[in-house]
Image (cartoon, rainbow, N blue to C red; front, top):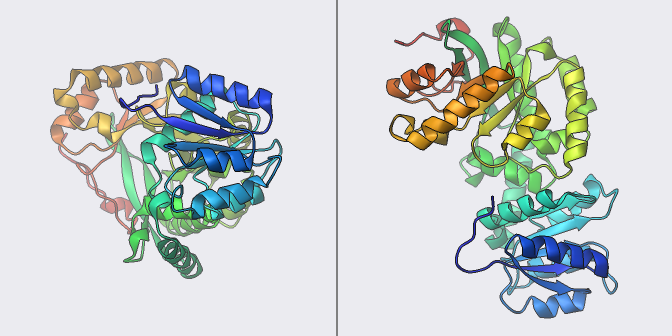
Length: 388
């Protein structure tokens, strides 16, 4: 569902093929956006001088390269704050995507795409407005060099937080969380991973965290499940061989591992994403969907992903005891999970009252500060039960 302020969002569509431009205009207009069409680069530059909120840019134009125009928009003082979403030609791949991100593009979507995918990407751009768009070049370069330093020196430590089955009350598994060892702006894990996505280093960063976590888990994780955060970007960009190599060097079995799909990036190609996700499952990985009840974690994604675990977003759990709407959402998710033999986990449980409520509603497992805070020391025997 797309929400709007009273001020309508103006989308500049830069597309040289008339039929495609008309199709994009019809889709966006039907969703409530105001659309301006530019058929070539110079026309787009002229139209960008008026109030534009988002630019949708085809890389193939009649008078200039799309990457050249993207560079112009992100260097110009008048337009550098405007989010740019690049439409990749069919068959476009990571190298092209990385080049666009280096030029400052805020989002990227592969052809062919579904109308809902396009609208989801536009909606996310409007919500986030990409802090990076307002970042000065010097600050952007500073983040790049700090990211490089973190990767070269492996300055991210894995922290572990347990998940507890409710009946019987026992440890079900542990989730791996990333804690950057820096005092820069990249000490925020989400900023670190978004910066890695921006500069094409996401895979190196995620694999470094996984390798460190597996090295710790191998000695103390016997009989337990391991939840590894996994961006859709990793799955849909065909990195399975790299992932497989990480586990071949570890004694941890993939049958112990849940890939927890996060919101660090949107799904660009849904059919390709679900096809490659099946490859992971065929090799023994299990799937968890994070943050159900917000963001990308829609019911449609659950239906297509067929996860073994769904995790109810912490914002739904917080204040659950006083909010009948949240109460109803949890009841629905629990009923859905029970019917389809999915383990339902409540995230962010911080009080005894919240725990009692999710237990009474039939949630099967939970995690949160009420039970145990994230720790760098994976000492399973030291995890203590709480008063339930």
